[in-house]
Image 1 (cartoon, rainbow, N blue to C red):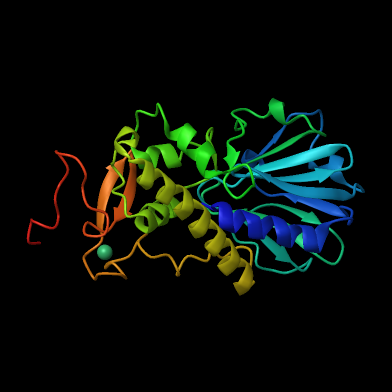
Image 2 (spheres, rainbow, N blue to C red; image 1 turned 180 degrees about the horizontal axis):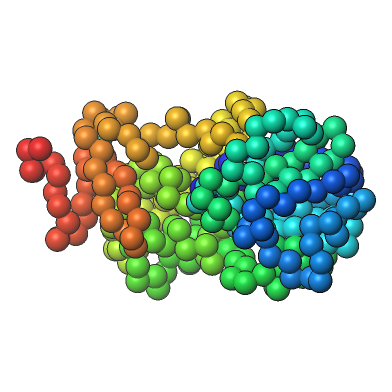
Length: 277
Ligand SMILES: [Zn+2]
């Protein structure tokens, strides 16, 4: 699933290549991916100029004259910029031909969704995310973060991934952020000290900004997720101390962490430093 650094890169690349171009042709290969919340289908976009591309939470939104196309890639959705006529059409969901360049949405699992709505009518989209705080924006200050953390009764990793509060952190970067802050993923929010909270805030900004820069620097193809620079997610050993990386379930997803750099802070958690494994 694309996360914030990936999405920022996707949005900037789509802007660069597609803005001010008009749709010449469209193809819908997987009808299940598209929901039209206006009368008609993708052909409504024919001849219309793309005015803007924005991100809202995990949605990439293409704003055309009169209509918006909101794409939620979910687990496996990817964007690809192709030359019209290019043969590789594996897992193609739909394509918009912009003349010299074609935007293809591919999805191996066909789990993503694209919604075609009247311009600005984003509230028509089912479960469209409420806006969390942009963690890379100027309003995401240490003070604001500390006040958001107060009164939270969940585990810190669940809090980080609450998109109604923070926009937006997924599995991979939640692990990286907690590693950077030296916090165990199952730590209760209410047990964090003021110093922990400040360190966590700085880790959010540092990790996501660093990753966004790294992804942008690589200028890779849009459809390839750049993740090999991550330190704990899907790793075997901690890059800092060499300890075996462990997994823990938090809210039905797997958290990866280093038991030595991110020690357990409460009773009832496995102390991997003492198991001898
Ligand atoms: Zn470690």
